[in-house]
Image (cartoon, rainbow, N blue to C red; front, top):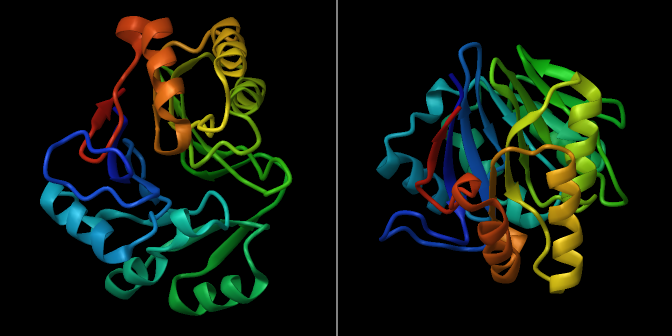
Amino acid sequence: MTRLTIVFDNYAYLEGFPTPWGFSCFIETDESTFLFDTGSNGRVLLKNMERLGVDLQKAEALVLSHPHWDHIGGVDSVLEVHPDLKIFAPSSLSKHLIRDLNAQSLGVTVIGKEPREILPSVWSTGVMGEIGEQSVVIDTDQGLVVVTGCAHPGVENIAERAIEMLSKPIVLLMGGFHLMYSDATEIAAVIEKLEALGVQNVCPTHCSGDLAIEMFKEAFGDHYLQGGVGRVIEV
C-alpha cells in the first residue's frame, strides 16, 4: 500500500491548519518512506507534521521537485531535525545550495533529464521544462501514482512521460497542476488530454487554481479527490 499525506499546502483539507503558499507531501510505500518538497515555511511544515502524527524521522529521503521558494523553503528546518536523509535534487537547483545540502545531509544525488529509479519502486521523471522540474512516479500493483510539485512542464506532459517510462496506467495524479493562470478553454484541453491518457483519479491542489479544481471536480466526479493540508490518500 502507498500512503500519501499532504503536510503543507495553501489549501486546508482539515480545519485549523495554516495555509501559506507552497506544497509538501509525506509518502510511505511498502519499501520506502520519503518527503516530497518542503513547502515555503519550515516551522509550519514541522508543526503540521506533528499535529498530523507524521513522523519525519521515518523518512529516508527528501525529494525536491524544483528550485522555487515555495517548495524548498522548509529544507533547513527539515535537515535541522533530521539530517540523516538522502536528498534527490534537480540539476536546476543552485550548485551552491547543492553543495550546502550535501554537507548537511547523507548526500545529494543530482537528477538530470533522464528518468531514473531513486528508491525501490519510486522513479523520478527526470527534470523537464525550462525551470527544470522533476516529479515522482510510484510503481504500485494498482498502477502508477504520480506526484507533481508545480507541474511547470505541463501536468499532461508529466503524465504522458510517466506512462511512457513504465508502461502502466496512472491510478492517481496529484499535486500542483499549475493551471491558476489558465482559462477555461486551456484547462478543458488539459483535462481532455489526461482523460485520453487514461488517468483514473486526480487530486489537484496548491497552484492548480480554483477554476481548474472546480473543472476537474466536475469532469472526474467520484474520481476527483480534494487536496489540502491533512488529506491522506491510500492506494
